[in-house]
Length: 254
Image 1 (cartoon, rainbow, N blue to C red):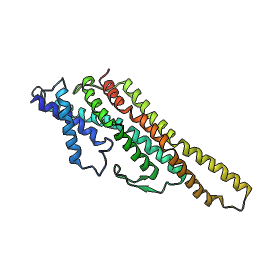
Image 2 (image 1 turned 90 degrees about the vertical axis):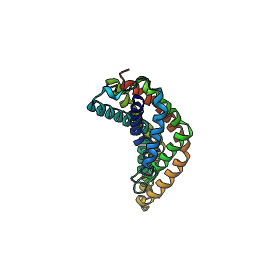
Image 3 (image 1 turned 60 degrees about the vertical axis):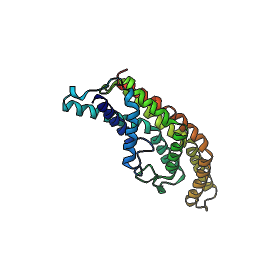
């Protein structure tokens, strides 16, 4: 009985993680797939959980609080995994603003709402790197190791946890600016050149010409900087498993 209940608690934490986990949180991913993946992950992880919980020693309210705590922790870990995708979406918003693609939106397989075209391209790039770098495999190991530092039903909030999350959120904006910086620079240079031409040739309609020039220049630079963007995203992705383990350690008060 204790073994099954331990599996159930691991399943609850894994299910909450997969609810907002990259690649599996999209509207096109069936719920049955997420449930099956959570069950398989719990089946693999639960034998290694040392502190097994016996439901016979707990009251109903304690069981509910225990499961709610595991759900909250799973959601928390899922948000940590999604930070890099928030960064690329923010960078896509910056890029679309600079090159004039604010009104051009599409729906990607992982989003249920329309997003800007550059954001969709960067999101797909991050997904491809996530899989090609085997980050999902390392992340499973990090999830399993969270039970070594954070037992079931343990943990709490702390100042160190708040500082760590604040630092990671700040790096979201840094990554977004690093990705969008070449396009921001090109937009600034195009604006300066067009303003100069507008002063030199007053007969030219700079306002209408600027849309085409800004779009063409932006798309060319965006294509040439995808390799550099992939390096920035890969560096951020490779730190995600360590962030998951570190958050588990900080929640445990370590």
